[in-house]
Length: 337
Image (cartoon, rainbow, N blue to C red; front, side):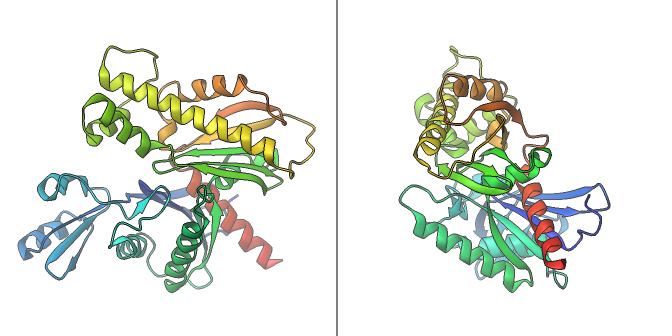
């Protein structure tokens, strides 16, 4: 299905990770991922040469070396104990003075100059509550960066990208939910059109921060435990595991509450003749029993539409980028008609 789509690109611009998707042959996709984080270290020509030798992403900026991407964590303890984030809660980080610089560096390194006519769809969250202005700034700024690199760029709602990635067999009708690092994004779509979208800021970073506070540990230790095969098993005598379980449950409950409220308040619900599939993706959904606990919370509620299967994405970490690529490919085909 990807034959002839080499000039379509999909970008998952997440708070924790940036994932680029490209078609590579008739039935193959190629994904490139980097952590969306950096550290600033004192400039040293020797260090710069060693970074080049180790192929670690970096840039010299006056008296500093900006070390970014997947290996930034290795240098955090040498600088100030933690990496810095160009994005926060799904949007450009207004508290980080190097936010634009680092996003541009990362995108230029990952994408390069666009081939002639290349289309790029990039993920964007639904507007956070009472914060639509930040979303407008974020979307338009990222679009300008990509256009300066030669792409025909547009934003796609992150929840809708999950629908595009996972629900093609359902005619792009269903619910896509992305549990990322900075936000949880939800979209109910009908034939590829978003009918209900919303986001919450209770997601992976919220779990890490809250767990660290409740358990007396660090954000880094909470994140490491979360990403090392953690399973939701109820009450635990281990303070770290107990805190993780509590805040995972809170993230799930907040998402289900939002879905119930969003569906009840909208006047745009389509008439449906079958239950909707709900597809789940994102790094924060990878904990053991996450899908089962989410489904159990959904079954306790009554919604104005019937929710059928609650399905984990076939590739949860790459689903958003894959859906964005699908949107870019469809844009390309529509333009060719």
